[in-house]
Amino acid sequence: MSVSVPKAAFTYLKKLEKNNNREWFGEHKLEFQSVQKDIKVFYNALLEALNAHDEIDKLKIFRIYRDVRFSKNKLPYKTHFSGSYHRVKPRLRGGYHVQIKPNNESFIATGFWDPAPADLMRIRKEFEMDDSEIRDIINDKTFKTTWGALLVTK
Image (cartoon, rainbow, N blue to C red):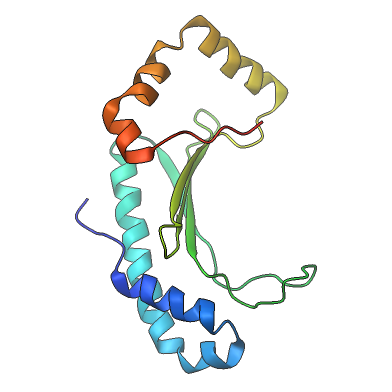
């Protein structure tokens, strides 16, 4: 993949974090639109790269505007860009989530969120029968160097 996240995106997000208000956002709307266009190019290039190895049904790029109706935090804008890639259903489920944020706070998440009990049992049985493939992946030196330790949630 020859497209990367533009440095201007990180610069813009840092400025937005310091000036998270409607007045500043309005004054910098053209800058936002330019960065947003570049981010969409990045997310679409990533979609093509993912489709070379997986079957992605759709890409969802999240809006920068926060829903503050029921939140104590009334800041109007997110200080990150994010998108998710959904695999072809019903055969393939799960997906990928990519969040772009300055100061080394970007991340990629993958998985199968909140599986139904029958699906969870199937996943567990598959690992019980043969977990060698996933163990080879997570114990690979390149994987560890690139991703570090895995975050386990329960």
